[in-house]
Image (spheres, rainbow over the protein chains, first blue to last red):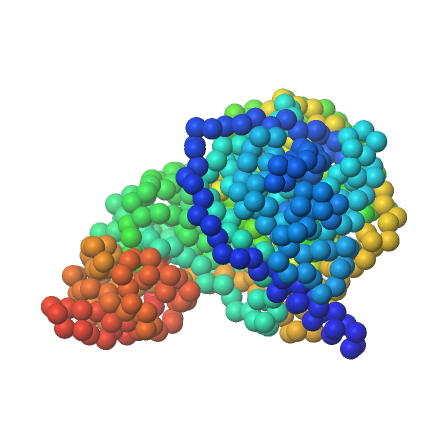
Length: 287
Length: 284
């Protein structure tokens, strides 16, 4: 028991190391600049890209939209000089973990991003892939994840084996989300239901009986003088989608509504007298 | 022998399920593009929703690091997926946004990554699986994180069957124990995920931004705002001790309050400050 407690404490220690320093303001992205990046599709269905870290490389990394963080191996962290930038070392070196560092310039075949936070680790899965593919493609040294690709409008086309990148204004931040969330949740203990909803006013009310397993939610009232009334929404209408999102529960409807913006038209998919209709609705700022 | 691989909560997956041969899909009418709504989870995973055999929606991560459409064993059972030689087939797989994936096949595996994340509710929603290569490769996909939709354009590409990579690596085993470890730590720290959603409460006012002031532009009949005596032109000045300068300040403060909660705030009317308290109602 004691050893397990110690381990969980150590893990929280790792979380401490996960916090990065303050953000630097980046120059505005040039939206006209689209770069095509070829990738190597390997037989297991993964794909490999060539990257440079602070001008050093190229190194082979796996491109993974399911990875909320970046990973690089200790070997290339040393080779690129990144290892010297580690701010805090983890208390235990599980899987050769060296800590977190910020890459000044991370480049995927000509596509460059500034200040990309990465974890330095000998990831067993990466090693496994490296062993499998080294004879043909060379060593595989890590994973390209969300902190890089979220900074671009990106397309992935397996049929052409290429991606395109256009700079975007999205800022993923520095926060190491998985570990931060883990700490938050453990500190919070038992969590309350999440409150969801819009910062816009539509002007209707819905309900759904607990025994009602059909799609959508039913409109119970439409308030006069509101965008919902103007759009022609009626009591008894069944709302199936809002902005293309399914609304099969009241929570779902509010969740979908959280993507709506004031004075911007949004489409409501409804069922009225057995017919599917689309209503255009423009919510206003309100609550 | 099934083996799926990933660190902490990162989805990179080694594939090792024996798979049957891909059958050429019959031609069907398809649109040339689909707007697929997504959201980012609390852990920055790209999440889409899927209905399988008419059931759901279920939450899946878009994952180029996974070789296939992978779901938990419980989900495969729940949607009555057909299983043959480790491969699942379905009557209908539909992504939110109205896109049906013709002849989708998947595998049922309890990925330790998802088990770990779900035990603590790290993502903020329950995760049922991932959508990987065998489905993703059939589309040209555009990701733009300043938008709330992904663009899926079907491409004419016969997706080769993903090859398995087997692993008897010791480190891999200890990595896979992370899922159970997180589950245990969750129990130890009393962490209980709560995936329930509650609608935010309703006030019944339209707001207007004028310079550094937030004004009540209109009030709905019979709304909590009307009952509380709020008037058009009232300036909303503070809420829960925080001053209000932009509509965002107001929305940030009330977006976490559910129906039935008491909302207390201050308004300025004709130069006089007034305290207002109202019970949040139902409405959108």
